[in-house]
Image (cartoon, rainbow, N blue to C red):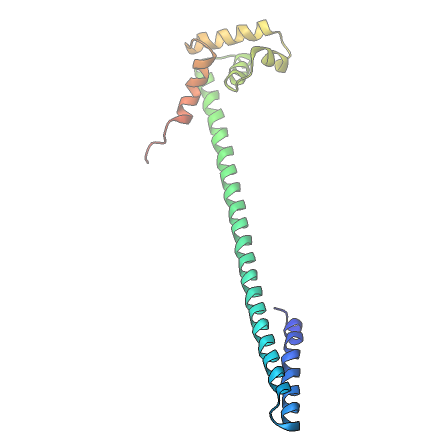
Length: 167
């Protein structure tokens, strides 16, 4: 809590203490003195509760900020790991395409087939005819000794879905 706020909040109890001493000096015991004393004690108790609650709220806010920063770091690490994994997966696919001796056009078509695009979508992307893309796809299946799009996708995706082997 700021020193200015503490000074301001401490002013009332200090004033009340002075006022109580003046009342006491002027006439001994009376109900006004008791009422002022109770009011001062209640104010000090409320002030204590206020300060305690403010400190708790400040701690909670700091914990929330720390948790948010930790979550942001964890998400960034996860995203970095996913990017590395994706690059690794794409490199493994490219290596397999080399093993199958696919042409550059067949590699493009094979990658887009694994991504789930239709022959028409691939043709539009490659600015070629659907018949040409169909021929490239047939060549990919023949060179890979696979029966179609589903087996091609499964060839690469099975490794992704398999449980990690214990290290």
